[in-house]
Structures are given as structure tokens and as C-alpha cells.
Image (tube, rainbow, N blue to C red; front, side, top):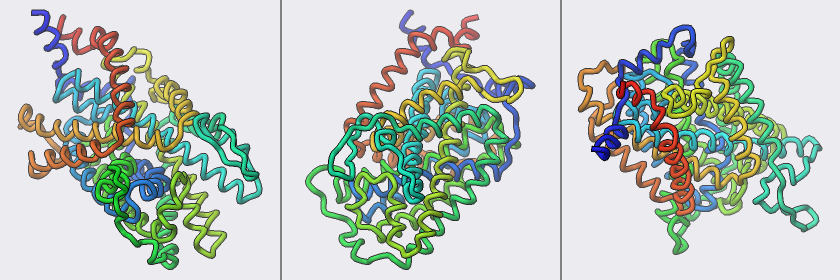
Length: 490
């Protein structure tokens, strides 16, 4: 009997009607202020960032060579399949929490906890990844202006820095990364309307930078840099060849996580049944075209092998053109673009944490809404500290891989959620319907799973350790305090 009770507790779901009641929480809930263009801006703001401006060069150098453009196309296919599933669930369940909320309504509390805890990893580590690259570009720009920052304050303690005199030292802390994460968190605490206005302005600048790199760089591409287009595998899985293309797809998949961050805003969107689909699929389509063009030009400007470990490959590539003014302009635009990525990821992070705390799976302390700003300010404050520690103390390659595997797991669960909801709630109103169910969700699961399996063993180990910590918190606190569980018991 006890075993059955435990099983029932793990599988308990949150009714959709209850989710909608939570979404309309009155004067004490989140405020609906966002329209369709604000959502598209949020998506582009998060999508175009470190995955494009930094991880493109690393994935080309270490895994795929010039064939990284194929990796971007494979990642885009997985995103398109998952994006359609996200759009259906977001139109049905317009509540903060993204995949966590969808899993709670379809697969039960235990799976919801796993995906919620996984999203904590995805967004917080994602923001930290971008902060490291932001720091590198800021240092490059300041150096162009004659200002040199101390190397020990630009690298984590786990990185060795080669100095100009040939000597080497260990980093201390990536101080610019810490500072920018703190500033953005404070802006998010101030209010979502103010944050999206800042994001919209910078998104325009960011798209202009991408188009400038593609438009100008196209005239300076060297054909020999594309030979061989698919470098021969070294004998190790993931190092060039088709296995390298798949691993690179798993790495650059990080570049697409912005569209699922859009779904965390569902509770603050006007007319979510219609606008969620526009925000998710619109931002994904625009960015996919830009990504493939950008990757092709970047690997044509610079030999792929020379970008190994380079966190600022765009700055390196643009130096191949005879326009010094363009170098500073592009670097400045990239810095601004990274800022919006961190803004949207930290925004999504706080909303997932807020949803989990609101369900009492985490302490109620994190569900508090500021009486004036109407934001979950305590969640913002907590992740300001968490992300700043990661950004200041962890190398970028480690952070990027951790984010990708977390994102892929979230996408797999969302795709499965669509199939389950079609069976359990066939007549529920849907503002958008995923085509060819169950084939599209099944294809999304297979593509995302293939990219997950292509990632290295250390990345999988970090995911397992992170989930183990999460399970300890769930069984030690969340399961006993669950609001749905307590209501069922009473």
C-alpha cells in the first residue's frame, strides 16, 4: 500500500483549470504587458548570442570544421520540431514555467520536478556562458582603445593565461562577467516592461551586426578555408567527420535556446493563445537563416583550426577585412547583443523558479512578488548570485556543453508532452496545433536524443550529478510540501 501511495504521489498532475487560475492571480500575480513583437524580440534577444558569436568558432575548430553549417542545420531541424510542440502547449497552458509547467500537467509531479531542475541548469548556466564571452569582447574592445585589463581578472581559476613575455599565470576571477550578471539581474527586478524595452532596442543593433558581418565578410572569404569541408575524423568520436558534425550540432544547439525562453513569459503575455506561437516560431525562423549565413562566412574568413579556444572569433574574423572602424562597431554590437541574451535567460530562469516555488516544490520565499515592481525579485536575487559565481569561476567550454544537454532534455520532454496531452485532453482548446502528431513530436525526440548522445561523457556526468542534487531536494523538501499533494490529501 505504501508503495502505491508513493507512486501516486510521483505521478500526480496539476489540472489545466488550476493552472489557468494561477495564471490569473489577480493584483498579486504577474502583470500581462507583452505583445507579439515583444515576444519575437525576446526570442531573438536570447537566440542570437554566445552560441553564434562564440561557440560557432569553437565547434568549428574542435568538432566539425567548415561543416559546422551542417551542424547548425541539424540543430535547426530539432528546434523546429520542438518549437511546434512548445507552441501547442504554450497556447493551451499560458502560465509561467515553460516545460516545467507542461510536464506537471501531462506527466506528473516527479517528471515536472526533473525538468524544472533541468531548466534551472539550462538558463542559469546559459547566462553564465554568455557572460564569459561578453567579458572577452569587452576586454578586446577596451584593448583597441588602449585600455588593458589585468589578465587575472578576465579568467577563471581553472584557466591558464599566456602573457606577452611568454610566462603563464592562473586566472583569479572573471570580474566583468560577474558585474554584468549583477547589473542585469537588478534591471529585471525593476520590471519586465522596462527590461523588454531595453531588449527591443538592442535586438535591432544585434541584427544589424550579423548582417554587417555577413554582407562585408562575404567579399573577403577565402575558398581554401573551406577545404576540406568535412575534415577527416581523427579516430576519436566527435573530432571531425560526421560524428564531429553531430557533436557540433549538440554544442551549437545552445545557440537556439532563446525560443523556449519565450514560453516562460506566457503568464505576462496579452492574448497568449495567439501570440505565443508567433513569438516562438517567428524568432526561431528569423534566427535560423541568419545563423547558417553567419557560420558560412565566419569559417570562410578564418581557418577553422585557428579558432580553437577563441571565445571571440567574430572579432578575430573581422580583422581579415581592411575596415578598422568595422571591427570596433561589430565588437560593440556583439557586446550589446550578449547583454540581451543574459537578460532573457535570467528572466526565464526567475519565472521557472517562481512557478516551482508557487507550487511549493521549493520554499515559498521564492514565490514572493514585489508589491511595486510586480516581479519575483527574490528569485532574481538568488540567481544573480548563482550565475555570477558560475560566470566568474568556470571556463566557457564547460559551461556551453552543460547548457546544451539541459536544453535538449527539456525539448524531449516537451515533445512527449504533446503526444500525452492529445490522448488525455483531446478536446482542450488549442490556439495552435502541432501538425502530424505523433510523427513530428517523435522526430523531435529522436533528433534531440541523437544530439544528446553525441555530447561527451563529462557533460553527461555533470548532468547526472546536477539531477542527483535535485532529487535530494525533491524527496527531502518538495514532495512533502507540494501544494497539489496537500490539496489531494485534504
